[in-house]
Amino acid sequence: AQTVTQSQPEMSVQEAETVTLSCTYDTSENNYYLFWYKQPPSRQMILVIRQEAYKQQNATENRFSVNFQKAAKSFSLKISDSQLGDTAMYFCAFMKHSDYGGSQGNLIFGKGTKLSVKP
Amino acid sequence: GAGVSQSPSNKVTEKGKDVELRCDPISGHTALYWYRQSLGQGLEFLIYFQGNSAPDKSGLPSDRFSAERTGGSVSTLTIQRTQQEDSAVYLCASSFRVGSYEQYFGPGTRLTVT
Image (cartoon, rainbow over all chains, first blue to last red; front, side):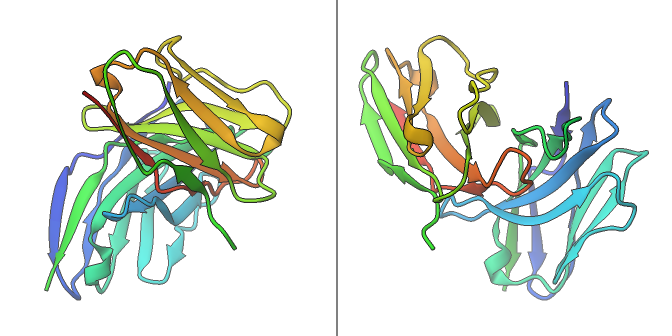
């Protein structure tokens, strides 16, 4: 069974600074996908960034980037130039890869990190 | 275009009553997922539907929970004889197909069992 662990229940950062959220996972699979989702107080889960395990290059999306260490089973999220709108719960998630192509369906989530960006 | 919608937004029910939660996926999305988000357990997968295939029910916590998807579109999650531990936010998501990597989430239904 796969597990996802986020060891930081809460973090805070000053506006315009950089923050890194940690995530580790456990799996015996070789092919899989990793995600970071953001959940603001509105409850709407929003995909922030995605990483395919077979890709060595770390994914980036504007101010968001990941540090994917496959051997260490680590997948951290770096937010640069933090903005007040980044205040939210952040969830790391895992999805198996299907032998028939594509994903296996359901996401397995960590328990989340509550990020507060302070003015 | 319209995103995933869920109704009701909030539901308060008495212990022992049955409840139905509704999810309208994004038009054209063939895969639909239900998750439960509770304080103690985080986000848990419940069930997913892919087209006309049999649903994956492996995450349903008990036989009091069931879900159906009519016409490959709208889905209803039913909880029978609700218990206080069923109190949670129930999130629905859809994707173009199960092979798609991005799941689009609805705003959830907050269920409170008194």
